[in-house]
Image 1 (cartoon, rainbow, N blue to C red):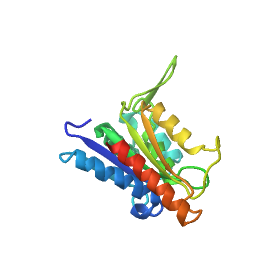
Image 2: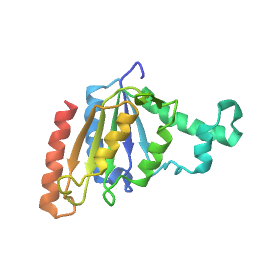
Image 3: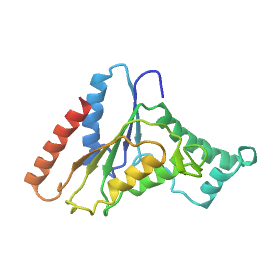
Image 4: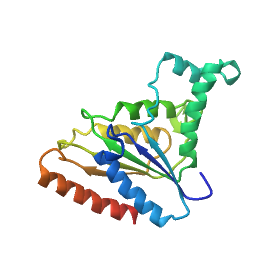
Length: 202
């Protein structure tokens, strides 16, 4: 992590800054900046700068020994290393997380696939996998057009499991649901999410 406070802010909405999840995350980021005027915010927008989806060639690049990598493989690994370095520098992470067809955006899944590197961000042991990325709080700002019934949320448990796999278990989740179910429902959900964000930022 850096010597000055650093926040990594990830957006994965198709609508970039205009997405509801992005607006929720932006509210937290603004509050974080007020509390850390000397801090640094690393911003990554996966709609504007998507990470390529994992394919066989990229996966082989991750597996190849450094001295055996081709120039193309070395470039793939360098891109992944840059993403991982942003996490290593961050004291906290804010993820804007829209819900698409009950899951996370494919751009975020592709991004996660470039973070999970055996021997770099996790390793396997006789007692199971161990995360190597380091502990830090991660804040998820989830926006949904509908309202998921109890027990039907497969999105945030997946993200929690992935983060724990890399070594991060302190995960705070702020939901805003029912945003497509009418103006009253939307306004109430966003107001409650805003109050939760303010408490979280404080």
